[in-house]
Length: 266
Image 1 (spheres, rainbow, N blue to C red):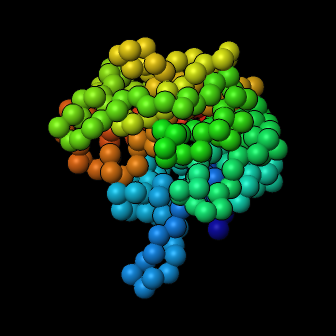
Image 2: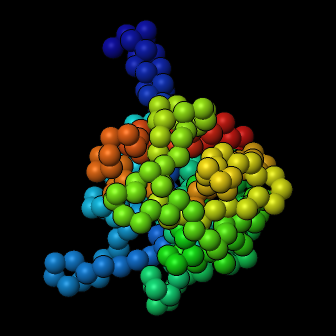
């Protein structure tokens, strides 16, 4: 092998190594939300809002949207966050934290946990918080974290949808919002509204002016929050009437989170 060819091979290997390091790591929480169901042999298994859950309850479609937009890996964190186990994660997602109806021994958000996550965001992490209405999530402890970023989830109910004949009660127009580059009309059902205390900004509002989605710049990082886990498979797989574009919205949100994680100064 001549010297020129050898140098070319070395250069190609170096470029490929650099490219493989570009992709982001997206981590889903399985500690604050840790729901179990029995499989066909009666064994308890994790489910709900997980990458590998391909049923209606899962995030498999959302996970594919992250891969499409450059994520190199999807991970799951099943323990309380620490500086060590968040290291290497670019986007961290916490969804629908458990209360006693979900889990007889819920892992509530603690002040120390909230401080760890806030420091991670401050250093450049991108955080997605997806709550739920108070009947289906622990918002009291979740707000220990949310309040770090200038907002809290309210104990109320917005975008209430009684049944499939009233889908548009959960409809939100997104056509003029830069985050939603391809989706014009989305569906979010039975969410908690979000109160802004200081630094957060409203992204989407209901027709009666309540905050459905907010963003907050925090240090070098960014937080996106919504009062419902609206991007799980049930609402991104085409089951909704065609006028709702949650499948496109999943891609829009994933792209926004990935793009912001690329801007981090770490």
